[in-house]
Amino acid sequence: MLEIPTFCASCMVETHRSLPFHRVQRWNGERYVPTALVDLGLVIGLGHEHDNVCPQIPHQHPPRQFDVVHTNGHHRVALQLCHCDGHPNPVCQLMRMGLFPATVQDPQRISCAFTFATLADFHIQSLTSKKSPYDYCDALCWHTDRAFSHTITTKYQEFLRVVCMWRHLVALKRSGQVHGIDSILSHRMPGTLAVCCPACPEDHFNIPDGWCNTPESRHYIHRRWLSVDGNFSAQKKKKRDDPGDIALGEGHGYCAETSAYRTYLSTIGDSPEKLTCAHLKAVNMQNKAKFKNAEITGVVAVVCARHGIIQPGAVVDLQKGERCDPLALYLCPCPDTSPMS
Image (cartoon, rainbow, N blue to C red; front, side, top):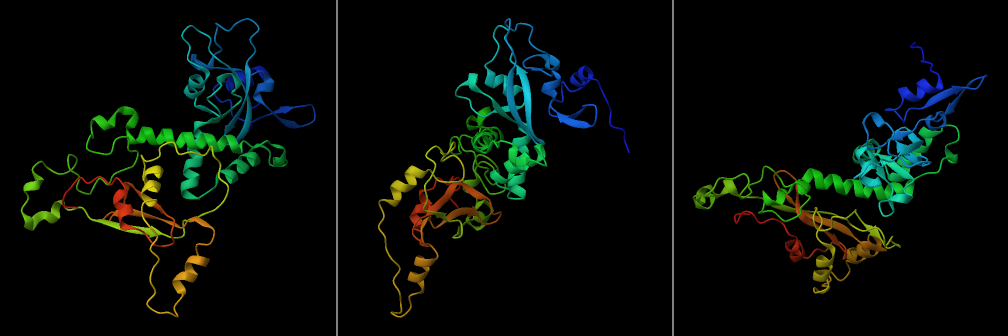
């Protein structure tokens, strides 16, 4: 068994200057009790090497107390912002340290932040184990105090906002939008965040110039096969929504732009399905029972038939049971990069 190292308070602070989210215990004369590094005097400086405190700090300017959420729970951390000439704003300083603030509107009121490691870990957990934000925040409280987790103030509301912004920023980076990829792939939909199928034929991307002159007998080489698939279990019930819950990249991902799609739906009438038998009422009963109190009765998407990759902007909602107007699918901005599609 490895022996747990023991340090004095000053040595403990120095050894954890770059490890501020470790949990330490302090001897009180009878037993070891959990203590925070900030109570031992640890202050992390932003904007300087080795996390040293800025030498240009105004006189009697105490460090700011932050509630930082890491993968091992909640931590109280004392941070000292940089005050050198030309220093960046507090949000940028926190970001450069790997901390995502819970708010960006008023930098002077920032008191909570989440580490990049926490946000990346939740992203993987939500994709693999389908863990909800509520359960993840509850698990972080258990990491903080396994005996009295109910005494830990959860950061659930702040976590929801930060995760939404984090995923949008990650999508902007991975899609190449922050690097000006639209100037390179100008034939695609401007500002798209979706991943296009790299194997399907796409003009100006993976097929040679002059492919239009291919003999008719070999058109299949440059033909793109698309199919339509629906999911009628992905319903949204009628309930009160949060008006502040808005889409940051609406119309730039896999879903069609909401306002344009709803405008189109308002122009088409409702044509109920005609029954061939007067005594067969299964369709009507299904619409009443299966889609009861459903504001959105499902989703339908256009995918490439060979590889199953969803086309950009080709996912729309269904509001009228399992009926789907085919013209609504053509409204989606699927990139028609090949006339042989």
